Length: 425
Image (cartoon, rainbow, N blue to C red; front, side, top):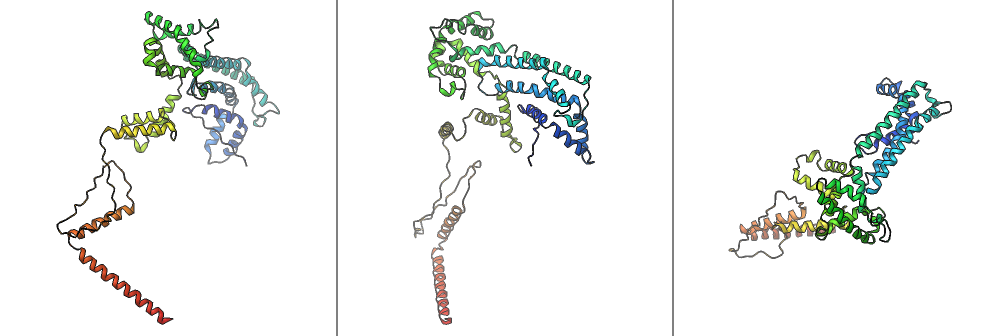
């Protein structure tokens, strides 16, 4: 028997609402039939209340509308959650999503599909729902208002930031034409003007300086095109725009003299949180680090652990091992560290001179250090203390005589046992 599980709709998880709608749309008939069976059970009052809410044309129509709308929004959301965003593709992605939503509004495809499924021979025929013309008009109005509000919300959210984000595409070396092309001399001028007006608003001299720097900087970006790693070109590790901006900052000591305003813009571009993925990851890591049993952790240590968890290299990699080695060396060099002495059993015979009294060894352990002492090491320490006590109390000879007598007694017992066994045979 094949069982299917509906996806939970959670507002705090990315795209979970879209997955829940897709699952409910596919298994809508099975869900309603199951609720009808559970309604007969007196111990399932929640099934009756839930069935009363969802076994309506308006609810099913809303599911159909969301089934057509949410995939468009999910595609747009995924383009901002990859961590390495291509600035040149932001505006096309937003325009595509808005056009797709307007197409759904104009064609009214969800309403048409609902009508077809409710008719005889349709997918929802077994539900025996009666859908009037008034119901369809209400759903049409809901579709028009919903999509109109979505498009308006997208425009409002990206209206002021979209031109600036798209203007960073001027730093993409892959988009710069060859020097022989007529478009080379004017390439990026419009984008640089947008950035200058945004970052140097009110200071015409700095804005003009940034525009002048761009005339020379584009030649450097063009020369870097051949040095971009293949993984970056393929989109597997960052983007060419991010790579070029990081290179500008890496050569800040050199570029800062020739391109001071360009370096300032590059720093701002790399610090802008374009996506909400990074804050969400930070909140997830905070929940993993500061747990219920570690609620008393201090803020400075918490900040360090979050920095390592979010920005640190992947564990068990070469970069991680190298970083850990450097951190250990810095920790050892910070100050002189106390080390616990290693206890080894003494193989030399004890001195017979009464004047030589060995000094007991004192072990000092840090209260913050956790050590695992094995049973063998503990027994060795006890034996050393025992021997030292015998020597201090001058009981060495007495103990040796007792041991000799015990050995002689053990040998005599063995002889008697062997003699008895011979008689019995």
